[in-house]
Each structure stands twice: as C-alpha cells, then as structure tokens.
Length: 398
Image: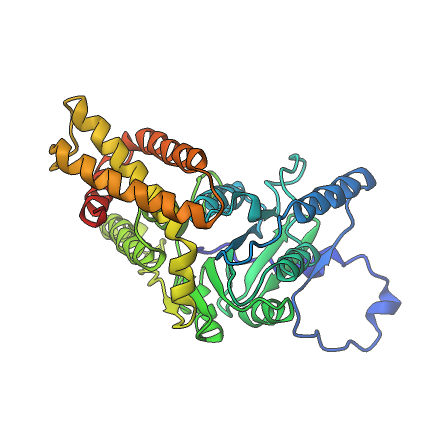
C-alpha cells in the first residue's frame, strides 16, 4: 500500500530499553526466518489469546477422504482497521467459494491499541501453528490450502507485521515458502494484498502454486487508508469478482481490469491538480497486479471450487429469475423459460457436487438461497456487476 512503510523500523524502538551493556555485546546476523520483536501482552489478554488460538485450531475438522477439501488461512498483519476488515470478509468469501466455512482460520493484528480483539493475534508463532495444524490434517495428494495475507509492504518484498507499541516484524516470500514446505503443504493458492507484493511471484512460480498479488515487485498498491473496508485489490478480487460464478483465475483477471479502471480515475484526478499541488503529490502509477498459475495445482483448484462456483451461479440465476418474474428483469435477461432451464441445470450441478462433499440436498438448497439473498443486498451498489455475473452464469448454465 502506498507509503506508510514503517513496520520493521518499529522493532528497534520496542527493544530500546535493553541494557547498555547488552547493547555493547557483539551482534549476530539476524537469521533469515519469519520473526518479530514482541512485547508480552498483559496476563489476562495473553490467556484469552491462548484460548482463542487453541479454539481455532481444535475446531478444524479432519479432511474427507476422496473429497478435494480446502483449508483457508486469512491474515491481517497490520493493526489498521482496513486490514482486519479485509481479512475477515475475504475469509468469508473464500470459505463459501471453497466449501470451507468450518475449515477457515482468521488471524489479525487487531484494530489498534485498546480495542478488543476479535481474532487470534497474527504473530509468527500463531501463523506457524495454523499452518502446522492444517498440514497435519490434510492429505497433500487431494487437498488445497489457501493463504491470504493483507498488510503494508516494503520495496524489498517484505510484508510488514505491526501491532503499534507491541509487535513489529515482517514476512518474506521465502519465509512463507519454507513454512509451507515444513508443514507438508503442497497444493496451494497464495494471495498477497500489499505494496511490492510482486516479489512473491518468482519464489512461488512452481507447478503446485497459484500466486496472486496486488502489485508488481516495483509498484505500490492503493486503498489502504484505515477508514476503508477494503483495499483496491481486496475490493476488486473478493468483494466484486469472486462473488460471481467465475473460476478463481478468471475472477482475478476480472479484478485486474477493475483495478485498472479505478487507478485510471486516480491518475486522472492527479493530472487535474494545479501544478503547484501536483508537485507535492506522488504520481499514482499503475500497481500492475501479477499472477502465476502452476500447471499441477490448477486442476485441483477447479475441483475444489466446483461446488462453490455452482452454488454461486445458481444463486445468481435464482435472483435473475425472481427479477424477471416480478417484471423487473435484469438487462437482457427477460426470458423466464431460458432462465429457468439454466437455473435448473446449474442447481443440478450444485447438488451433484454437494453429494461428493457429503452435503445434503437441503444444505445445498440453503447455500443457494443464501447466495441469492446476498446478491439482492449487493444489487443496489453493484447492479452492473450483478447483471454481468448473471449473464455469464446463464451462458454456462445448461
């Protein structure tokens, strides 16, 4: 995210109280591992944190033999509210997409000092524990792990950790890669919402990984103001594209187009500034989001999201059919017979995929109804997007 790269610099301040004699001792090079400088929590808060983390780990169900199960780890590493909001909402959308509601963990750096925590802390130990637990549960031959991280990022590719006044550090691509390997996690989707996150592309350019980033290795991303609900990247990918029925990679490409339009507006606004003011504002260059798709993992992702994609399209078409029946059809979607045929076909596909996942007919029907209700809520703010998604689902329904 633009500017505000200061997380790692806080580490020295946290430990400035160390004795002068200790400071004079020869210093060993910092090991290349995921780590942070951390001040202990008060006892009551620390106890609550241990209980929260233990509950999150113990609540994960075992994988189901013969089912492409997905486990999701969504992490806010910086304690501005926008990042926790993004991690929370992205976790919900990913959980629905991958039928992983009970297989999802959210970690957060919180929303600032003095604000009660809703999630286990996003510390290196908790992050490692989550990966370790997930790795001990999955069957690496048939299960998928999705890791989403959101924070500020530095030009060297470090994703920053900060809890103001308590914790500071950073995680790099090689740290995450090593941790995933140590946990025995093979097939994975890595999504990084941070400035300079393109630094994660090369280390994860392997056949078993899909890696999606908010920016190129030399570019910032946008929308990380604390009062926002989403960054630009999170908004485009999760709040817009992934709510539809398109597969993951297609949804990412749709998100990139959205981001390009939003950033184009930013640049146009900058160009319109008076020369004296323009000189004080950095030019908003395109973030150039990056992706790499591993050949081995892509079929597994398609299998893992087949149920969620079918449920999503069924919900989209159910909404479109309700609109047509009420005499207020979505643009170009007034043929009720065509809509009914497509809706029936995609509902059948959802039921078939649900059966593979040990979901009852009632479970799948409830999921479709919930999606339709969610589309109704989104329609006032995203009418054009909702219509475009329904049109896509109509084309692929039968």
